[in-house]
Length: 208
Image: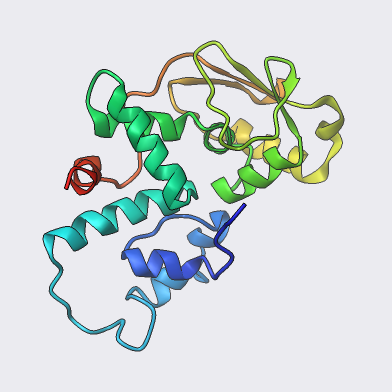
């Protein structure tokens, strides 16, 4: 499967916003966006007039990079959101939030979505008692996500469990860090999705 293997700090600089892709590093003085908050490349500091299309494209790219999704997969999510009842842009964000790697991140069991994706692929989590190693797996209301018994002795997992116990999880998740579990108690509302995205611009882009 294709994936982006380049320097991820360039992505934040290109989008002109902190996307918190590298987790804890993004909160330190090593953050590349804080040190060089302009687009990468020779002409990154040049002042450019951005078209309406360019604004819409950047918003879509920002959403893709926050959730770590390639173009084809993102387009599939959009088409699925379009077929659902309700507001397409909000449906899209709800689908992205329900990805297993994002849920692990929201539970506090990873410093970033990238780390959550790696933990899922390595088989550290179960959903309703069954091992799931597919980061794009969509959880639903009532699903119980749990750290596998044999993974609880992993030093990194134990460290993350301690951090999860000190974090406040979103209202649509019920987390019991001492039990290494989390439960999806509701579909997230738009107000509970705290990412800097104007989803209507993505809808306008795909509606061209």
